[in-house]
Image (cartoon, rainbow, N blue to C red; front, side, top):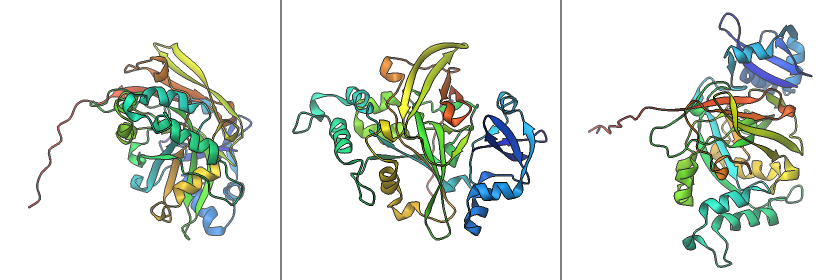
Length: 331
């Protein structure tokens, strides 16, 4: 079962369940967050809560998408309590692109490897520990909070100071922290971990800056476990025509880390286990149009599609106007 959040014909929030491509309204449901809290409070699955509420009218999902009524598949009443984070160098094909971006005479290790390649090799050797064991920690980054999340179908803004505005087709794990501080996984969604690759290429220590950008995930939340093999397509459309496209792979069969290992190294920090918080954690990619020399322009449309996750994730790219930041003393 997949879930979407949207605005109904009256502009009110609503939730629908999608099975076999058919979307049906979940009765008396205004948010996935509320459904999740109800499941936690009663110690049942979210599927149980949905079954008890019951399903109503059949909906035209494509019309909801076309009319711009989609919301992110989960959000928090206070956007500051939704974390967006991610891990990199986690996929079997991810090292080559990153290595090319960061390769320079000054960043070689003692074994003549870039720092990126060294970390990738650590993942290959220790990213898939036996059950119950702790593997090597991955590269990790903070991306933003709920204020940086753009709903599916709406433009992703790039700040005026950015050097690049590039897509990253990824899978995101969706979690909520229960009343006892335990992370609870709802499922997974397609994600565009939008980044500034030119800034990152200047020096790998700028990666933290390059990741502080808006992003999008959805449009559907896939409940349950992550498929071991994911094979989708990432595209850039310009003027309605395909400018660039390339397959992307994910799932543990195509990764150097297990999902469990990546989850552990995120939630091992007590900071990320505050009751009621939502976490959208992106698991990395091996596919970037930037690696093929593509420079995006305002109005270009990103499309990330994989049939196991339902409808494609589409967002245009936009550039913000330059702004002046004035720091005012408070003394």
